[in-house]
Amino acid sequence: MTINGWIQIALFCAVVLALVKPLGGYMTRVFNGERTLLSPVLAPLENGLYGAAGIDRAQEQHWLAYAGAILIFHVFGFLVLYALLRFQAILPFNPAEQSAVAPDLALNTAASFVTNTNWQSYGGETTLSYLTQMLGLTHQNFLSAATGIAVAVAVVRGFSRASARTVGSFWVDLTRTILYVLLPLCILYTLFLVSQGIPQTLAPYFEVTTLEGGKQTLALGPVASQVAIKMLGTNGGGFFNVNAAHPFENPTALSNFVQMVSIFAIGAALTNVFGRMVGDERQGWAILGAMAVLFLAGVAVVYAAEAAGSPVLNGLGLTGGNMEGKEVRFGIVASSLFAAITTAASCGAVNAMHDSFTALGGMIPLINMELGEIIVGGVGAGLYGILIFVIVTIFVAGLMVGRTPEYLGKKIEAKEVKMAMLAILCLPLLMLGFTAIATVTAAGLAGPANSGPHGFAEILYAYTSAAANNGSAFGGLTANTPFYNTTLAIGMLFGRFFVIVPALAIAGSLAAKKTLPASAGTFPTHGGLFVGLLVGVILIVGGLTFFPALALGPIVEHLAGAAGQTFSTGG
Image 1 (cartoon, rainbow, N blue to C red):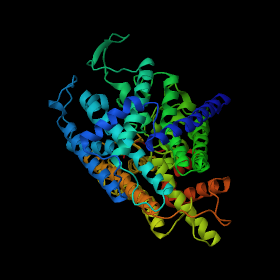
Image 2: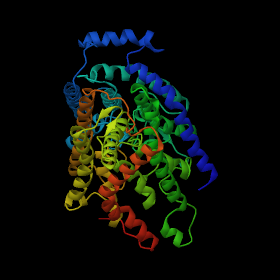
Image 3: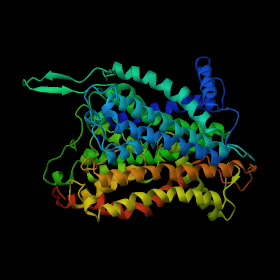
């Protein structure tokens, strides 16, 4: 590790922190329906969309109606994207003449992009047409990201309202998120990316002659626009197979830094939205503080592990850090930081091969996802994900002091705790359940490229990434098979909506309650004690749930490597 490396990490944190308050203030005005700088231009368009769709912006929804609208909306989105994938061979804007996507891969891809996961069992430039990339994937990148933000805002209303039956309108929240937040930011971001050398064209692929005299086909396309929303919306799906490691997706050190900041920008700012909407910005800073503690701890471990290098090679006197699977133009620190960011934020974009990280370096991205979408998390999903843990933390605190737990003047009772536990437990059930099935079936064992604990970690990482709606992978796993495409699709769908529905149920229950004034016995939830308790509960729940699986994978792999033991590739 170097001083230069730590300065890069500190600079990243400083820039994200500087964006939290201004972006949070802007989004608060948007979701409260207040006038913004863009209102003169966008308000007529917003009103026109409501009129065309027959939506009354003043008519809000009960949480059940809000959840129902989300599910129906995404069922139709899934069917449209599936059809687009299956019929792309006969549709326009297909200069490379890509064939129809196989049924199981189309199922997996449609589920992936509808759920904001963007798991990719395919190579983008060799599988999908321009139309599919634009109308299918980029379109869903906007909708899935906007859905996560809309749910987060609805959950915040549950905490901020009193004696209310509604939590807002999904259609209004969705529209405002896209029009006022995602589209303006993505337009500016796309222009910046183009200035860095990222293509944005409908021109066909072209052939070049290499220095050796050989021929090579260069894939092009409308890349910059997809990169912009995949980062800002924490989608992560790359236009090219190697994602943000590709020079056409991430060509410079500046583009790499801005992409990392953009992954965290909206998710971090939503904690400020929470604080503003509940009337106490300190509450938002406390939640962001808990996220920061977990994130910085993870970054430190990844950076230390990758800078130290492989214990096997170190034992042979070969030191200098682990550069396997990393781009030379980014190096160890930028690769380690990107890996921690993309798995903490449930983005899934990668600028290095996580499968080539050291055992401990690869374990942290795995842990980031296993904790759930809470360390900034996916846009929106990170906020309502950590608020679910806040409810559990308040419940534990109430048990310790022997009084009814309260948070922001709302009593936390059996219904809220049950819904919180349902949301928390569904993820490990999917992650560990499917991993167990894959490790005892021939179809599952045909996937990993490595034997021993690393092969197990490849399987565990895949199902963890799917259920956590992340999308990154240990690339040694061959996942484009009917078994993996189907089971991963199930994991993605259940991992998304089995958290959203309980979160909205909590919002509806809290919105209907009266707000109680603070008393001398009220547990303060804006200080260091609360932050420490919240972090402790998250780590205890995660440790008790996942430590046995981690012990079978990266932990034993590290210990074996330190003893000089290696494992062969192959099943």
